Image (cartoon, rainbow, N blue to C red; front, top):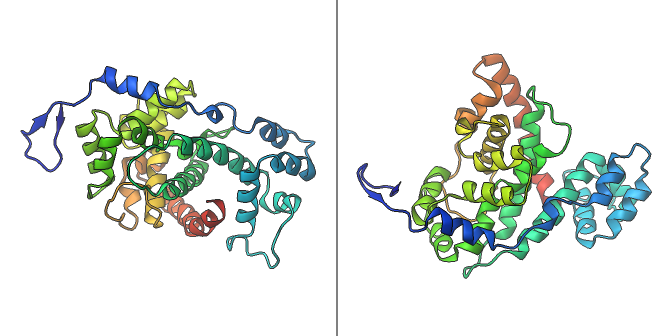
Length: 309
C-alpha cells in the first residue's frame, strides 16, 4: 500500500498494479542491444596501446550519428578553438581517448532508447538525454574525488542510465506516465511518490529491474535502483550516492530531468543530500575540497553539453 502525496498521514490507497503485472509490462518492452555491446570495435581500439587516431577515426566514420556528435562537441564553445574542425582525426586529437569513449557509450544507448519512446503527449526527449549525459559526466567527476577506484566505465554508465526507468515507464504505462509528467511537484521525491501511487513502482525501481533483466552488472543495477535513496542500498552505495548527487548538480546547472515539472534546486542543496555524506563524510576539510572540485566541473558542464546533444 502507498500513501497518497499531499494527503493526511492516514490516507492510504492500494497500488493499482500488482508486482506481477508491473514485471510483465516491463518484460515486453523492447530490449536495448547496445547496453551489453557498446561500440565494441571502438572500445577495443581505445584500450589498445598501439591505436592511432587514424584507426579510431576510421571506426567512427562507420557511425554517422557518432560522427555528428563528435564534430559538434569539438566545435562547441567549450573547446574554444579558433578554427572549425571538420576532420575526424583532428577531433579525436583534440578530444582525447576518454571523451571519445564516453561519446561511444552515449550515442548508441540514446539512439536505442529513442526506439522505445511511446507516448500520446509531446515530450522533451532531448532534455532527458542532455540531463542523462550531464549526470554521467558528474557521476564520474564525483567518484574521481573519492577513494573509490573505478578501472572501467561503470561510473559513466550508471549516470547515463539512471533515468532509463522513465523511458520504460512511458512505454509500459503511458496513461499513468502522462499524468505524472503533467502534475507539477515540489521536488523529485514527490514525483517518485506519485509514480508509486499510480503504478506501484517508481522510475528507479522500474529502471533497476529493467537493467537487471538485461543482465547488467550488479553495481549498475543497484546504483540505478537506489539512486534516489542511496542510504538504503545494501551494496554499491557509493555508486548510488554519486548518481544522486550528480542528478542534483545537473539540475542546479539548469538542466532538468527531462519530463516532470519540479521546482528548481536550491544552490548547494546537493551538499545536504545523503549521497554527499556517503561520498565525502562530514569533515569540513574533505567537504570543502570536494565542493571546490565539483563546482569547477559544474561551471563548465552547460557548454560541454551543447556539443554533445
